[in-house]
Image (spheres, rainbow, N blue to C red):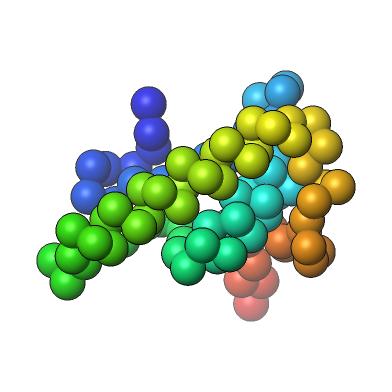
Amino acid sequence: GMPGNPPRSLLNFMDGEGRESLVIKSLFLQECIKRGVLFGVPIYPTYSHTQEDVDKTLDAVAQAFQIMYQVKGKEVSILEGPVMGGVNVRPKL
């Protein structure tokens, strides 16, 4: 299942060994941005999103997933920028 609660879902991107992959996540975000959809983590739908917004988002995600499927295992080869960094952790004071 998808982590998070239904109105505030998350997408996790795992490699073939079940570890989180920032390379795969970077590719997903890149392909969505190229289609006009900027994701955060978690995903925050709001009442201000129209049906057109939802349709555009679902279309961008479907296209991104298709590309990810086509390049499975070679994601780095089509990244147009650096792999995203991990979550910044606030240092203990």
